[in-house]
Image (tube, rainbow, N blue to C red; front, side, top):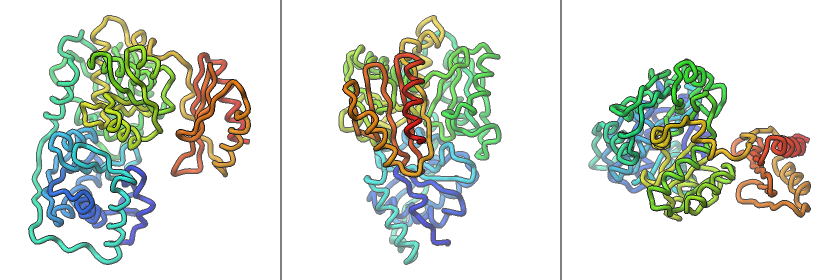
Amino acid sequence: MAVADLSQIVKAYDVRGVVPDQWDEPLAELFGAAFVRVTGADAIVTGHDMRPSSPALSRAFARGAAAQGADVTEIGLCSTDQLYYASGALDLPGAMFTASHNPAQYNGIKMCRAGAAPVGQDTGLAQIRELAEQWLESGAPEPVAEPGTLTSRETLSDYAAHLRSLVDLTSIRPLKVVVDAGNGMGGHTVPTVFEGLPLTLVPMYFELDGTFPNHEANPLDPANIVDLQKRVREESADLGLAFDGDADRCFVVDENGDPVSPSAITALVAARELARNGGKGVIIHNLITSWTVPEVVKEHGGTPVRTRVGHSFIKAEMAKSGAIFGGEHSAHYYFKDFWNADTGMLAALHVLAALGGQTGPLSALTAEYDRYVGSGEINSTVADQTARLAAIRSAYGDREDVTLDDLDGLTVAATDWWFNVRPSNTEPLLRLNTEARDEATMTKVRDEVLTIIRA
């Protein structure tokens, strides 16, 4: 086995790298053994996406786990949120083999503790990496006297039934929905989840193919939803849905083929979840979701809580505050009823229920949840992130009409606009998001800040 540089593949939230150059089956086996040691689990659950390398990596991890005494339930092909479902329903730590929307040569592992609680840098991932590094030098750990068993289990129908128990779609008006699965795991889950509902499904790229022959499975990039937008208009469909590679994120387009911002979806689902909880509850949103989200939450009786960007922060805050729902600008949606884990599919069912429960088109329904003009995320490559942030701070710091805060990068807010600039953890980039009450103000603020960033 090549001595891998684990600092390159063990990220803040998961393992991710090129196969076999950066990691391979022998290393996956060590990760399986380390996962059992760190979690202390006597049983775990594993699943994998449609990438060519996924079944063998997943099986190697299972062998490593079993050699350390853990019984392994293998659920096979699944979406990431289907693995979270299994971890929650079976109350077992889990490992999902996927590299989400990364190109075909990549693979990765998303790990969680029992009940889908996240495993990240500070919650076990660093220790898993340390053990794997030790064993790369000293050789694999000795197997225990009584190794665990490997059994396979089908969970797709139970996963679908659980989601459908949370959102009632039986009485909605018939809807025509185009779904672009991007050759990812949505092609596996959507037919079962939608089965028997009053939906006419127009499938696009449902063939599972980890080489992504049609387009990258990342619906946040506008280039990857062009086919969906066109098809929605051609079919005169009520809406379109696009899933990423492991189908944990869902992106929505309306009947005109126009993208609906994830902030608008967050606000819409928040209003529904608050109504279901008697108009009370905490809703989490990250600091670059639209101002619309906390406004809508308050209007519906809820308490908005603002957090840093990133699923480990959101999941930790969900658990701490007992939040009923959380949403991110990146189309990740988290539900208390789903073990605080993210599931794009459940958010999609909420959108279908909201649309089918009234007579108007989706564009009219989401208009009330889309009150401001946003720039979207703009990345700039910079030589010195700290110096550029300091320059922005000095440009705005003395102004009477603005407030500054440092929750995640730098946020500057006035009465009619705000912007956030935050450094990437992995690349020499600054990410800018800005929002204002009108297009002219947003453009002016955006260009002012970009001038400083790119000076």
